[in-house]
Image (tube, rainbow, N blue to C red; front, side, top):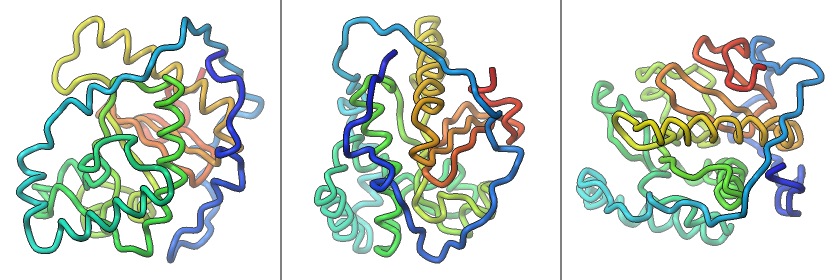
Length: 242
């Protein structure tokens, strides 16, 4: 199997996450995994370094423009230092961790956003899972597309009222390149989805990890409940429902 054991940094206590202003709620039964889920075993070839194609890209022009507005540079610097202090910096370029919602233009918002400081710690558990999956070669060619959204933007963009993005506790990402994927890209994407399910089934419960796939193909992860869902927002269409 691709991952034999989790290092100490991925202990259950390490992923205890208190959301500022968030009350405990009962999980929607539609999202709950089936009892006694089938364990997926994947044979892995020789270990290779995780892909860093996203690091070769220059920051988007709209990020540079946004960064130089108001006091965004200072706010980003403080948030980035917080991530460094907690040893979760460098997983993906900073501009990706600051992406708001893909429909930000329609919602008259901004493409990037720095969450308020009281929400910073909410991101740590999810970023650590992302980092471990990158280091373990579960994730190779991917790009983070949405992290924190304020409440108004989240509702306008079609997010759930109790979306974990509002609390800076969720990460959405796209597998493969932007645009039309090649045949090779499609094979890598499907293989990555299997690896994601393998990871979620093996370790998701202990990490309180949610794994979802939307109709757009975007992948969602958070650390606010062991559950999975697909395009119809139930586990019946989840990539892990087999």
